[in-house]
Structure formats: structure tokens, C-alpha cells
Length: 388
Image (cartoon, rainbow, N blue to C red; front, side, top):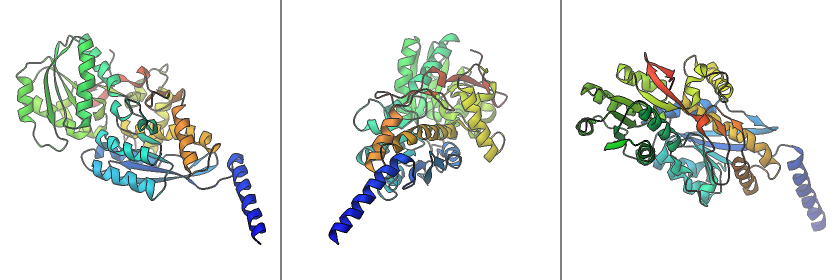
């Protein structure tokens, strides 16, 4: 009897190995997402959540399950979500979170559980410097330095010599001040003020008065979503007449709605997706950007497109490329599959996304270059591709 059982067990194991290489479906691939669908970053997280419904439910003949949780723009909740997704739901990959502090807080869990994580937040510190922990972490938004360099170049081309900076009092603001400082120095632009504000602040009058006392040629507001409108509206109220710059963290229609006429003329760097229809046909990202735009607006209405949803879409594209490769080396739900998925993500080459062309490597888990940015101006309450 025992001999027969051993024979049956060995036969099933052998069959399992053969099945995993012949395309026979085993356990579903599980993808866990935590997004900031409520809280200060809701205008970023909602389109990411909406995009999750557009991601493929089957890849290479394998069923894909998505488990989507809201972290309310709170890093503690993001950690709880990541812990639940990895330890209880046993996901094969994590997507999230929406904002920098949440994403940074999740890195330890990704490393501890050996689960590939694709962040939808911008700071380079999410994937740099590369170490054992960050070997499990990837990101889809453009690094801050890529966008900061575009701003500094634009400022220099338009005669800006001095700039005042105001950013979030968290990792997003700190990262932007650090990276823009480097870009400004290279462009010979002097940063004359460095102020901070919280995402849920109701007033920034004190910070604005300090900035204006330096009489800067321009101001850079390093915020994300609708909270970034507050400093600009306050500067307008106080009569500041210089040039206004925002980061790609405001590239959604909710920001335009909240900021209104106070943001007219503002410049910002953005992913090509924001102005996909205005890109020349020669732009290598245009086709992929329009594919996402049509899919999202088909499900959510004309004009509903958001660059932040594009970061979730691009995470999905990365997984669509990586999952078939990983399935050849392990079954979903196993450490072998997660490691194979991590390695496949790291080997991504020439993948067109909605925001750029991804080329990952052992030392680069962001993988985007200058093709992932354009300069945009707010004109008549709309996004317009800047000619320069």
C-alpha cells in the first residue's frame, strides 16, 4: 500500500513538472494592488484603481486575479495592505502604492516576502541606490531627476536666474528638492527659498510671504494632486508675477478643476500620455499612449484620462511581458515563480508603455529615458504641449 502511494505521489509530481512547462494552468496568478483611492492623493489613486479593471484577466493561458485595496494615502495602512496581500492572499506580485511615503514603507515587506513590487510613485529613492531590498522593487513613473532637469532647462531657456521652492513636507517634497537642486545648479539657477507644506494644510500664507520676500524669477511647487493648487492660488492672491512651475504630480483634470484660472500659464514636465493627441506621429510613445487613452476613456468617459492611471497600466504591461517568461520556470504561488517574475521584470527591454519606453537592468529598475517626458503649459484651462 505504501509503495503504491509513493508511486502515485511521484507520478503526480512528475505530471506537475510537465504541466508547468506545457502551458497547463495551475493556480491563478495573483496580483495585489494598494492604491490611495481616498485621502489627499485620491485624485491620483482613483484612476489607478479604475485602470485595474482594464488589466488582462488572462495571460499566456493563465488566469490573472487582481486584489485591489485602498490605503487612504496613509503609509501605515499601505503597510497593512501589503502585509495582508503577501501573507494572507499570497500574491505573486504587488503593484503600489500611489505616493512616495507609502511606497517606501512597503519595500521591507516586498523584500521580506520575496515578492516583486511595482511602485506607481515617482521618487528615485524607491529604487535607488540598488541593494538587496530594492532588487525586488520596480517603478513605472519617471524619476524626479528626469523631470527636474526638464524644468531647469526650460527655466534657463526663459531667462530664469532665481527660483523659490515649496514642496510637500514628506518624502516627495524632499526628493524633489534634492533632485531639482542638482538640476538648478547645473543650469546656474539659484534656489533662494526652500519651504514646505503638508498635503492636508489649509493655509500656506506664511511660506508664500517668505518666498516672495526673495523676489524670485520663478517658483517651483513640488506637490501632487489637488493639494498642490494651494501654494499657487495663494501666490496669485498675493500678487506674485513671476513664472510658475509645477511637477508631473499635478497632471490630472482634478488639479485643473481645483486650481482654475489661478494656474493659467503654468509650466510642468509630464509623461507623453498627458498630451498624447498632440504628439507628432514620429514620437515613439504616441501609439502606446493612445492605446491606453482609448481603453480608459472607453470605460470611463471622454476626457477622463489621467497620467496616474497610466502608471498602473504600465505596471500591467510590465507584468504581461514578464509572466509568460516566469511561467516557464515555476508555478504561481511559489517562491520559484516570484523569483522568476522578478528576474523577468529586471530583463525588460524596449517595452513601449503609456509614459515611455522601458529598458530595465540589474542596476536600473525604473528604465525610462528622455522619451518619457515633454514640457506642457496650462492654456485656457487645458494641457498644451509646449513648443520649447
